[in-house]
Length: 80
Image (tube, rainbow, N blue to C red):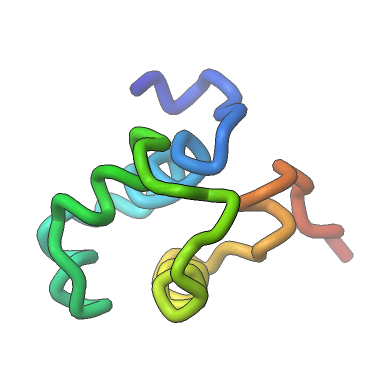
């Protein structure tokens, strides 16, 4: 994935955040107690973003320092 291109789906934003922090898929999976395949499916938008696993969603946002607004809507946090 080109890190300069603006991600447009939740999966693309998730992957972009992980890659920009240089975190391997396997390492992220271990940290949040999930399989790499499950996270990879979210990154490829193959899992249901309409009804995501809330525990997984919270864990991903915490580990990758993302807001839910950014993940779902692409809204960048306000910079002070």
